[in-house]
Length: 91
Image 1 (cartoon, rainbow, N blue to C red):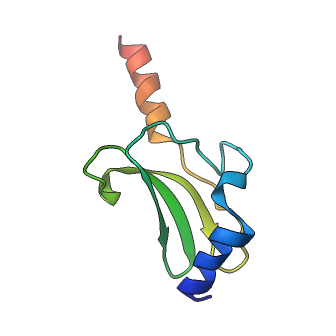
Image 2: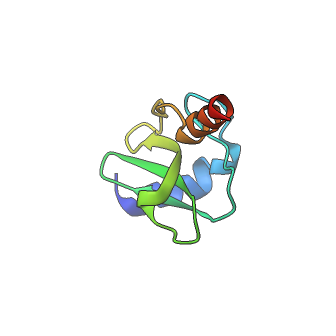
């Protein structure tokens, strides 16, 4: 699928605001530094920036979808949740 087709699908056929919340496949944003949708060859994903730097290296993945069938990929453990749990245990 072409990048243009994927962008059209994101905007018209499955806008991200309509993704049902399920913690294995979708994370709710918790910061206000902005988001970005990144389109790769086999999948596309949305990240939330963790600082004003707006670096993909310092971002948090919110969801990942296949470019072929639009299905969601299961996400790994949320690093934000892990950090909060660690803070709760240590302090």
